[in-house]
Length: 259
Image (cartoon, rainbow, N blue to C red; front, side):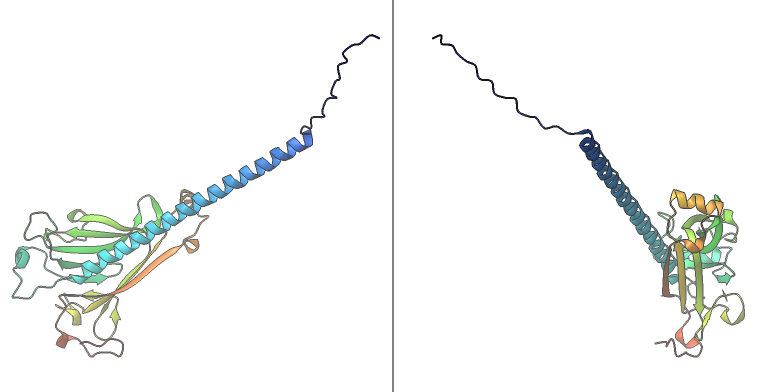
């Protein structure tokens, strides 16, 4: 009997693989997840940029209000006793507060000098007025001008240093309290306000939030109106430090009482 070695072969195992349909399905799911992730990332970045624009616009209007508040607080009309302070008597432009229309200016006396190392430059004329943005006539700006020389009328733009305080203004309104009600105009050169400052002023300031590039182009071509834009508003009451004595104030009203 012939003996031999028989080799037993193990039957091959069935190796499972991905079918074409399963592969296409996996790719579709992966693509959907990727698109969703990219969309979410874009939304988050846009929300972040939107928040940054809002915060910057909010900071800008608060800084503008602070500047206006401090300026008006130091509106100045010298008496005969202190007319020589800061060489006021030698300046060609006399101290004044004049508000007519959408522009007003006044003499300012602060506690520090406007010009470095100058002991007398704490007296200046400050003007607030509005103008159209030179690059976009649909945008209004609030401009602050300062003149320390007091030699020419500050309404002449070349006599003062100017700064755009609010680059995209919606509304700016200052009214003056005369003891009975708030006035929209004041003139220390004539009328019943001659030679006297109001005791206080009310400041109403509002601006638009900073535009995106898309919004800017839409505003330029007229497809976006200012009525559709986000508005930031502030209101404040400021007491003028150099106002006339209380006994000169008119009859007190029910709204405000002098103490």
